Length: 67
Picture (spheres, rainbow, N blue to C red):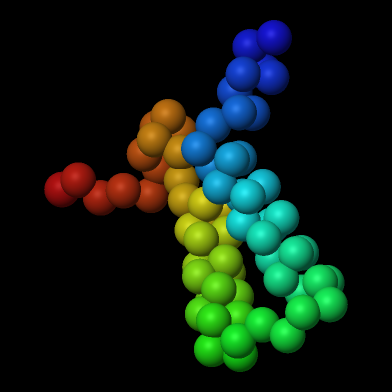
């Protein structure tokens, strides 16, 4: 149960929401505004990259130089 609760965090919610919105944007029959689509795709890529490359604070801080 603890592992299930760990999966439901802000990162997961944002990732699922943004992925759902991206799928809806790309596969619906409508014609989205090209500027809005470009902005959303850029933001989606930036958010996904940030979340999946960010180091966990509980990993011991490897790679940090505190002096």
